[in-house]
Length: 111
Length: 114
Image (cartoon, rainbow over all chains, first blue to last red):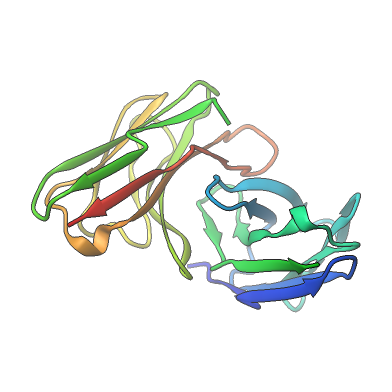
């Protein structure tokens, strides 16, 4: 079955700098790659997703890139702000099957 | 997301007790899931259901059972609770006909087994 590895487990960046979180997946049939953000004490919520027919997607300060050949995808957050502090989860799915999550990255934005 | 609700929100119980966690949704989604969240371990899938007659084990189903009573309701049971089942439990839904598998999570149930 699918296995999703996420790195790093913890990331600290200065406010205003960029943050990058990386994930790899094992199932070449996976075609949907969402990213979820979980603020402290709250539920995970989708922030951006990408499908296998697209290499990059942007939404304001966040972007996701996908390399199907290498089976890895990354989340990029630019001009980080205090409200970006949270746990971020990547995930992979074949669309017709369950979704598998990575173990999460705790992002700290330092003042 | 108020469309996915979980009861109870917090529960403290003792080892050996039977516990049921309930999830309801008004989103009209076919697919429902139960996840467990432990620090450093992310979201691990316990069980999932793609429609009322479909039940599937996830990666950590031992010690748990589920019931899909209706399209809108999916309950998780711990037949005999043990301390290492202390965790935060999330229910989620997704729409099989929608754009991909976007998951909509409930607010979570914090379960403590003493």
